Each structure stands twice: as C-alpha cells, then as structure tokens.
Image (cartoon, rainbow, N blue to C red; front, side, top):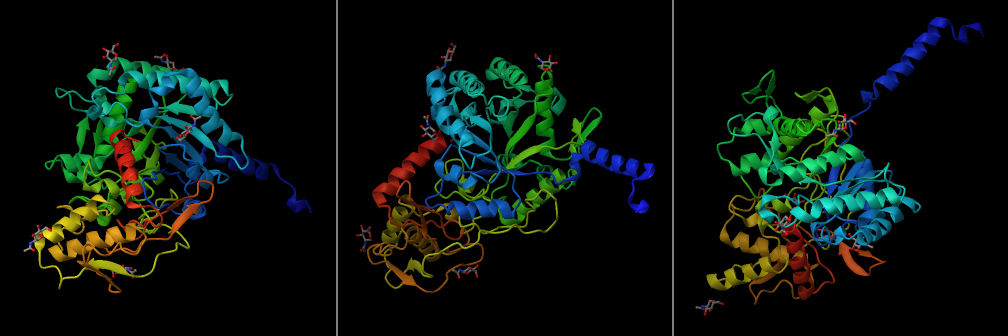
Length: 511
Ligand SMILES: *[C@@H]1O[C@H](CO)[C@@H](O)[C@H](O)[C@H]1NC(C)=O
Ligand SMILES: *[C@@H]1O[C@H](CO)[C@@H](O)[C@H](O)[C@H]1NC(C)=O
Ligand SMILES: *[C@@H]1O[C@H](CO)[C@@H](O)[C@H](O)[C@H]1NC(C)=O
Ligand SMILES: *[C@@H]1O[C@H](CO)[C@@H](O)[C@H](O)[C@H]1NC(C)=O
Ligand SMILES: *[C@@H]1O[C@H](CO)[C@@H](O)[C@H](O)[C@H]1NC(C)=O
C-alpha cells in the first residue's frame, strides 16, 4: 500500500497541477456567444433551438428583447443570457417606476423561476447613437441605463446582472491627422455623453458593448483592402507605433480601448456584442466568404491572442447571428436577412467551430427533427406567362406580401437566373410563406404547383417548415424552409402585413 501514499514529490506534482489549473483557466476552450434575433415568421420549437445550442456547445446568447419564447428556450440550459430593452422603450424607461416594473417582470422573474434563465446582462437599447437616428435617442439612453441598473441593484441582482448599451463602432474614431488605433476618441456629437457613460460602467462593473462589422468596411468602400477584413494575416500591416495591425477587427477594438483609456477607464471590460458576416445580398456576401471570416475569427478566439494593445487574452464576442431572419427590413441592404450561421430552418451554411476550439473545417451541428411542409414548389407557368407586365405585377405583389425577394437583388444569390426563374422564385417564396395554403399559388392563373425542384446553383427554392404553435399564446409560430423561404400557416395576409409593418418599424428603430 505504501506505493499509493503521497510522497512529498507526488504531493508537489499534484499541487503544481492544481496550481496550473487555477492559474491557467484558459486551458479550456474559449467560449463564443451568439446573437439570437427572432425576426422570422415561423420559429423553430424551443426544444429544437435549445438542442442546437447545446449540441454546438454555445454558452452565451444575446437577445434583442425579453420574449417569452426565447426565455422558455433558454430556461434551465445554464446558457448565459443578455436580454434587451429595445430603443422604443428607452424613453419610457426614463421613468423609474417603469424601469422597475420591467426589471421585475423581465429579469427578476426569470432569474428566480425554476428552471431559471441565467441572465447576466441587460442590453439597454440597440445602437441608439447610430448617426442615422439623428440624435433621437441621445437624451433618453443614459437615464434609462441608470434606471435599469438601479432597479437591478434594488432587486438584489446588481452584482450578477449588469446593464450595458450596445453601441455601433461609429461611436468612436481616429482623427484624420492621426489615423491609428492609439488616437481613438469618441465621436464629437456624443463625446461628453460617452464620457459619462463609461465612467458609470467603471463604477458599476458593467462592460462596454460594441458591435464591430468588418463586412461594412468592404461593403461601403470598394477601395478597402479586402484582406484587412479577414484574419489571415495577408493584409499589409497598419503600423501604429510599436504595434502593427493586419485586420480591421483588432484595429477597431484597440481604437475603442484608446478612447476608454483616455477617460481613465481602460479596465472597463469590452464585449463585442455583434460580429459576423452575411451570406447573401452582396458580392462580398456568400457562404464561402463568410466561412473564411468566421474561420479566422474563431481560430483567433481559440488562440486567445487578444489584440496588439491587449495581447494574450480572451475577447468576449457574440457572433451575429444564429439564424437568418427573413422578416427583417432590407433597408440596410439585401444582405440584411442573411446574417445567420444557420438558415431559418437550422441548416448550416459553412464550416464553423462554435465550441470555441478553433477546429478548421468543422461543420456545426444542425437542427434536429425539423418538420417540413409537403415537398412541392410554386412556379411560373411559362405557357400562360405571355404578358410581361402582368407577371411583373404579380411578382411585385408576392414580394410585398410575404415573399422574401432579397435573393433577387442585383448582387444576390438569384441575380444570375433568367426572368422566368426569378418570377418563380418570388411565387414559391410567397407560397411557402403562406404555408402552402390553397389559393396561394395562383397569381391570376400565372402560377402552378410542381414536384420539380427549381433550385439553380446558389438560387435556392426552399420548402417551408411546419409552424410551431406556442400553446400559451395560441399563435402560429415556427420557422422557415430553405434559405430565404418563409412559411406561414394560419396567418392571413392582412395579419402578415401588420407583422411586416411592425417588424419594419422595429428594424428602423434598431431593434
Ligand atoms: C417585459 O418585456 C416584454 C418584451 O420585451 C414587454 O412587452 C413587457 O412590457 C415587459 N414587461 C414590463 C412589465 O415592462
Ligand atoms: C437633448 O437635450 C439637449 C440639451 O438639453 C437639447 O438641446 C436637444 O434638443 C435634446 N434632443 C432631443 C432629440 O430631444
Ligand atoms: C475607474 O476605475 C479604476 C479602478 O477602480 C480607477 O482606478 C479609476 O480611477 C476609475 N476611473 C475614473 C474616471 O473614475
Ligand atoms: C398586360 O397586363 C397588364 C397589367 O395586368 C394589362 O394592363 C394589359 O392590358 C395587359 N396586356 C394585354 C395585351 O393583355
Ligand atoms: C433542391 O435541390 C437542391 C440542390 O440540389 C438541394 O440542396 C435541396 O435539398 C433540394 N430540395 C429538396 C426539398 O429536395
């Protein structure tokens, strides 16, 4: 038995081992968060989404509201959750009693129920200082932030749940006379306000949440050095004193860090609230390019390389996003509905290691047990389509009333197909959106139902999925078919356009 006794040597080995565990917790995989937006007509059942998250070892989820559907999904999963107050609620939250009631109903309740929702953050607004809003939310955001944090504190949750305002990276910049990260400063119109907000975070222990989109650098500026948007180290470096940058993500992050340090708030933790790449709607948006972006990003996270100004550390990121959202406005661009790592029906589009391990070429686990509508499509009956303007009118109708026609955009996945196939795409999208309801494949006799799959290359003709019916609300819910297809079982077209209007407004308001 003597062999099994701890000799001093064995003890010190064990001690060293234990010490190494506590000193280097980073031995585990980095953790990646995902944004889960639910602007979709039909949602996948909560169990399906919960399993998808679990199968992919996703440990953090950021939401855009405090929707009971998402809360049901996340309850009992242990996943860390950021819930949100949308921009339209910022003004009401300037009233403390309203903020208190919101926290009681949407935070305290879920934190104390069984099984609980592991809420860690409250996002107060979404990019409320975006320049496009013309100062609309400038005065109401900070009071709302303070009221929410105070309500959290008074509910006894202040140590565990922090309020933070997700901001677009347009909130800071480097002046043109010194265009390097270390010269980072706040945008002039909100500089004083930003100074107050970060000092508030410095006191409360809340993180600064910023959304960083290298895609937009490329989308907006055709002269942007493309490699700089990715993480392959192929770009000619931007040199900033002792530091050199080969990707815009790091440069952007360190610009924020400089702005924080200029306020003596350099230790305020940073959360990258959104970072991702769309797969349709632009020449720079397809699964291959998105895959390249995410491969680089996830490898970087796994290596814990940090940024030049804050090397060798974890960067807290939430990928944008989990699913495509075909009910979003395309006002920002045709890419706006295609930010999903997964299609609306939970199919993977490109390899990505969501577990944080940074494994190259690994495909994510897909949604299991998704139920589709019948395998049939609605297409243009070419024999009857003799009047071009009549066809065009029908296509316009379909696109305005439920079909997702973003894929038909100039730079999108169906741009290359002929006019008849484009019309078919719109008809089918409408048909699936209406849950293949009888009469939804007619278009004045121009359309016909077919068992033939019209998918042509990247232009995918989907089949809708069966709606998930949420018993508590009694409304038809669920999600979609392949790619941009939508399914809609019980809703009327009138109901649909209301949904569309509400969603459009929400999108414009930045929710
Ligand atoms: C809780 O959040 C939901 C959804 O965001 C909102 O509709 C509801 O009014 C909130 N509850 C209270 C009491 O503010
Ligand atoms: C915000 O407050 C400033 C200063 O009180 C005021 O000049 C400005 O008009 C306000 N903006 C809005 C949109 O209410
Ligand atoms: C922020 O917090 C740190 C650490 O508590 C402190 O040293 C620093 O002075 C604070 N900054 C401001 C502007 O109060
Ligand atoms: C073609 O359709 C348009 C729009 O429905 C209609 O106004 C026009 O009369 C039609 N032309 C012919 C030749 O039928
Ligand atoms: C339609 O064809 C495409 C391309 O071959 C395929 O990926 C898709 O699964 C097919 N859809 C159905 C419902 O069979």
